[in-house]
Amino acid sequence: MAVEFDIRPMVQKYSVLPIERLKVVIRFEDARLKEIQRGVIFVFAAWSGPAVLAFQRFTQIMSELPTVSLDLLVLDMDCLDAESAAQLFGTDGFPAGVWGETIWVRSGAVVAREIAKAGAEQALRDNTLALVI
Image (cartoon, rainbow, N blue to C red):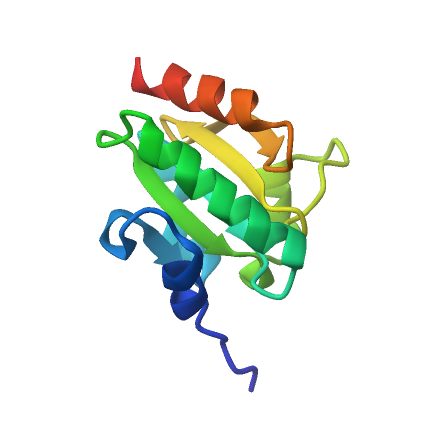
């Protein structure tokens, strides 16, 4: 039987936002993608240095924006199988979790995707603000 790794301590350690503001998800079905009205999902690979750095930038940016009306989820990349990854990333070859991908959801559907790398800060801001409106 596979042992689930709890990413919550790493999320808490590296988040600029209070842990209570984030929903940490270690099983894809608990994300309830179809039930998210307006939300942002950060796909977190706790074992990836670039993802950890991207997560810090992501939470810094989210702390600067009016995100109180949005669901902010941190999804453990390791819980994704091929089917759930396709739901989030599509089939267009979008990378799958190693770099700190960010997914924007409106009315249960993915509306934008971005790799949370250096230089993507404006896209993170723009896509998030588009959900707030």
